Image 1 (cartoon, rainbow, N blue to C red):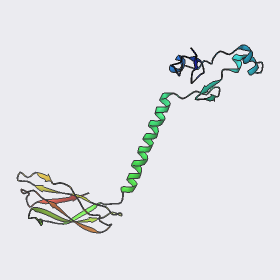
Image 2 (image 1 turned 180 degrees about the vertical axis):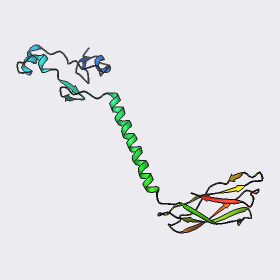
Image 3 (image 1 turned 90 degrees about the vertical axis):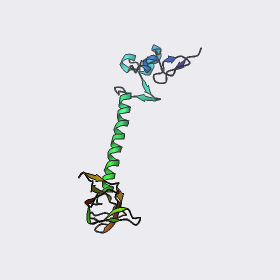
Length: 183
């Protein structure tokens, strides 16, 4: 049965293996035994122990004293790069979204919508430096005196220093005390 060489250290392995037992356990590489005559000629007459073994990793020679990276180092590097990427994306998101708002709400009027349902209409002013859409909701007081919010309504894009109008539908039991809040 022909023997294959370990993909990491070159020691003989079985025909169904790619790494020897030592390499699978991530133990230090032991070079294959070479004849003493070859070792002496390769090291220029020095003792083979003084020259040290020739280590390889993925087909390249590893210099003496260099430690090979472990799985933990690979995974730590990838995790670190992912964390850096998330920080960069969040930083860019902050720079892109700043400048729109705050929004000031004025001229709040409780009335009826075109369909005849109760509604509140308000004027929304963009006090920021960039154009943006305001997210508005109405807070109305029920019969027990508790404030109830409505669904949020998004305005059209409001340019800096300009105003827009928002209309929010109210439930049938909404009282006359209604406040509109926009962010």
